[in-house]
Image 1 (cartoon, protein in one colour):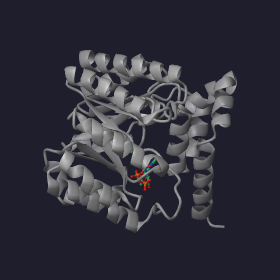
Image 2 (cartoon, rainbow, N blue to C red):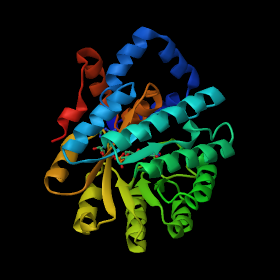
Image 3 (spheres, rainbow, N blue to C red):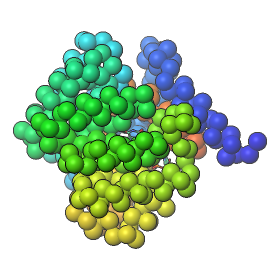
Image 4 (cartoon, protein in one colour):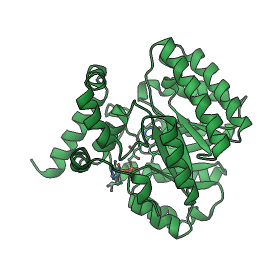
Amino acid sequence: MNTLLIEQHFSEALKSVARREDIKAYIKETPLLYSLLSRAAGRYVAGDVLEDGLNAGTLLRNKGYNVSLEYIGENIRMQSDCEQAVKEFLKLIRACGETGAASRISLDLSHIGLSINPQLAYNNLILLAKEAVRHSLTILISMEEAAKTDLILSVYKQAIVHCSNLGITLQAHLYRTPQDLETLLPLGGCIRIVKGAYQESALDAMPRSKALNDQFSKLVARCIQAGCSISAATHDDALITEMRERGYFDISYFELEMLYGIRPELSSNLHAAGFPVRIYLTYGEEWYLYICHRIAEFPPNVYLALTDIIQSDTKPAALYA
Ligand code: FDA
């Protein structure tokens, strides 16, 4: 078996493990394991509490980056956990309004009630969006597994009619996405295009490939052509070069968005060259699924994770020039 194939198997296995609630619970309940793995998480997550997110966000904003901030979590099934998450998001929105640590809040609808009742997620989204308006912030909804796409789009489409400071993420790897995009463009919200992080059936999604990059490029081009505010979220050199060559970075409603801790040297170079770069920053204790995805996307990250566990104290914000 060649290295690429081994990495592909590893990546698929890790994405399956990422969805295991029992493993996540075991890690949370085992202090030594939690503390060791949280060192590896420190490369991608600002820290466990709001202040960590605000501090890292402020540092990046002071260096001239735009920042999206997320209180990390998803698939909440208990009403009380959902209420706690909404309270935390309200605190986050107010704190960002006061400190300027981020201009955009990101969230998963399943963190604010989608897995309990879509109406609850809708009500909470409206509550948060209205608070965000008071602080001149936007809210960008993440996209979750394909099984939830219809529900997420439906909640978003109802909400954006009342709150124009909303936006949504679309995954280029899903075959359905070009059609979904056409239904969203007339609504006017910001669109974030990503490749897609979840493991999906081959019927629904294509793997990392030239075809996927072509679909990503076409979706971005369609948003640009429609005059839609667009966040092209990728770390892929080929796509970034192509977007630069097409002059997208000079368009006022276009921005490149990258995940905190991933290729900070690339963000720094683009930022130094005067291109708009937004960094997507997360904080919170629910980092398990998030770091599994970051390692699965780029299996050599497993070595970085081991190094972080041994050496500890990674401070990625310092890596951004
Ligand atoms: P790809 O995975 O093909 O990687 C291209 C190159 O980028 C790699 O060869 C490597 O050099 C580098 N790279 C990529 N990932 C890396 C990593 N983890 N570590 C180090 N290098 C790496 N997904 C989703 O399903 N729903 C969502 O809502 C979001 N939201 C979101 C917001 C933002 C701002 C970003 C940047 C990404 C997401 N994603 C997401 C994740 C997205 O779907 C995708 O999994 C990652 O962005 C990785 O894909 P790339 O486009 O970077 O390409």
